[in-house]
Amino acid sequence: MSTARDEILRRVRASLADVPAAETSDDVAVVRDYRRSGTLAAEETIALFAENCADYRANVRRVAAGELPAAIAAALRERGARRLAIPADLPAAWRDPAAADGAEWVEDDGLSHDALSAVDGVVTGCAVAIALNGTIVLDGGEAQGRRALTLLPDYHLCVVMADRVVELVPEGIARLHDAAVAGRPMTMIAGPSATSDIELNRVEGVHGPRTLDVLVVG
Image 1: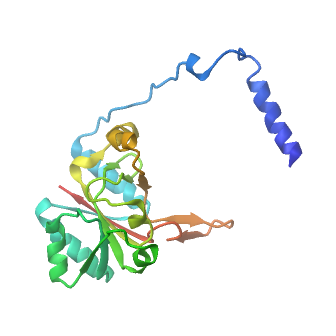
Image 2: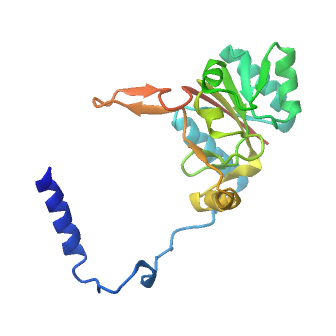
Image 3: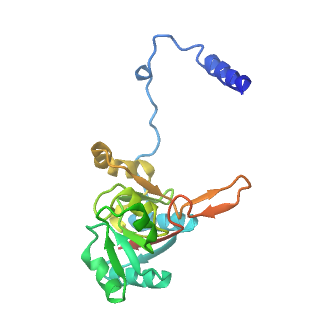
């Protein structure tokens, strides 16, 4: 182990040999010539997001705004999810058809980890969705709740408004500025939680929900 460590340090020193001793990181300009603004039309951006998100084994469906409450109820019915944890500020209109269908909404008022693990799933909105890599980001803002709310249940139904879908990562990061300044924790979701063991066998649901349904609205 020490031999490997010594070799790594030797290579680092060799790479830094021509760097002046007084130089700091602020003395070197960081090249930021990557794209910061997307070029796709709105519909193309949404289609790219849906394609890449589905590629991570999420179940993605596009619905009209007026269809959202019924679509939520249908998704929960299909999953057999009857007891759902939700952030307290989840819009009431999203809940009504599912409640009429027998779903029980459990508002997260500081539910214990055991209580969150015991529900059938969780329903939330999101802060932003990035088309280029199919990633959804929750920042603890409106209709999103705290991190534990979407990490412990086995099923997550996430509502993504069309105007929250951006093409590029820099565009998504820009939308998270206020949350970052406020120090709110963020959760980046790319499909159901999954990991692989040493033999590369994929196992889902280890670090978060095993199943992810995404409703893109608009």
